[in-house]
Image (cartoon, rainbow, N blue to C red; front, side, top):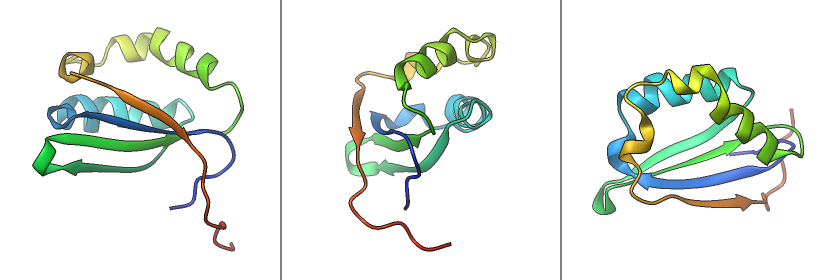
Length: 101
């Protein structure tokens, strides 16, 4: 998985977030808002949902503030926040070379 320019953030949530709130709400809204979901996985043994999110640009926090303040994010129902027991978020840096092309 190649992450292009800009930061990439790794999220870890309770797996119950996957469903309508994420697949039909958060995922398409994030992509329309200029983010790329580089991958998303469930660890069934731990009931965890992890995903890797990236976007071009350097001001991640400003982009996040705009995303969460948007009317579109407020309209996501059910609100995904109710499924999040704990969030772990890390900025990650790729170590493998980008594939040509």
